[in-house]
Each structure stands twice: as C-alpha cells, then as structure tokens.
Image (cartoon, rainbow, N blue to C red; front, side, top):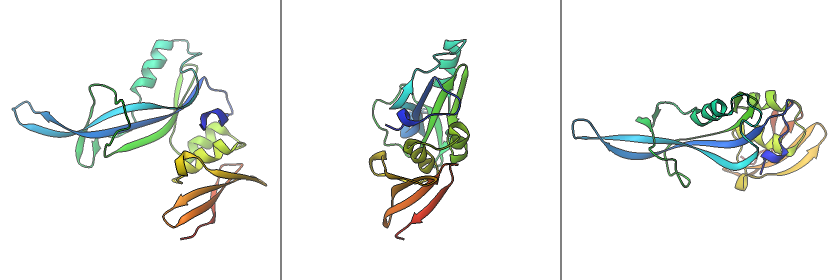
Length: 184
C-alpha cells in the first residue's frame, strides 16, 4: 500500500490508484448487424488514503468530476471505446489499460500519470513509496507492486524486475531516475 507513504507538498484530501480498462464485446448495430467494441470502465483501487472531496465546497460536483475522469482515448487496438453499462466487478481481461494516481484537494481533482507530475505533487522525494510511484510511472516494474529498497545518500535504490532479472534503479530526492545495475 503505497498511498499511506505519499506526502504531497500541499496536503490532499484523498489520493488513490485508479485504473481504466477495456474488455472486448459485441453489440447489436442499428441495422441488425453486430459491431465489435472495447467496453470501458474505471476502477478505484484499494491503495488509497483519505476521503475523496472531503474539503470541497461542492462535494457532489467534486465527486461527479472524479467519477467522470477519463484519460483513455477513443480507440483501443482498432476498436471504438464505449462506456460499459455497469462497473466491472473484477480485474478486466481487456486489451487496453491505463493506470495512474488521482487526488482531490478541496474542489480540485488532479491526476498523476507521469514522473514529472509526481515530482510536482510530492516535491522532495523523501519516502520509499514516493520513489516507487515515480519509478513505476517511468516504466519500472516491481514484483507484486512492491519493491525492495535501500535509503542511500540523496535518494532511494529500488529493486525492480526486467526481462533479464533483477534491476536496480535509483530515485534521487529531486525525483530523477537512473539505472544503477541492469543485467541486460
């Protein structure tokens, strides 16, 4: 659970992991034929802390903005992406997936989808959880979503995985990621 160790420079009401995903479906077309689509639905993960929109001046408007947030495009592997009739109840077996972090601060609903957005929100990277989020947003993969880490002078060394095996990356206190050891 990374969210508990995230400490934005300016405090937030809520921060959590969110995923948008698709699954293939066949729908009936207006002419009686069929059309193949990629059905889209968002899922808030269990990795979160706080209460969404807790300090918003218009809580309902903030929650609506959060619920309607969509970063995935209009197509997925050549199929049109359409809204699913009901939220997914389990991990999708879809063909497209977008994972990011979302936060609320008063009436503001924000997203963290890149290392630079994470650096802007966190300021100094002073926890292993912040280092892991920045590395993940930069493309690093960690076993079971966690990472072995060591605090080093000026940052954190994280153990990630690559196709060749164990890889060590360093995330500096200013959020820059560099490869320390790569077996490839």
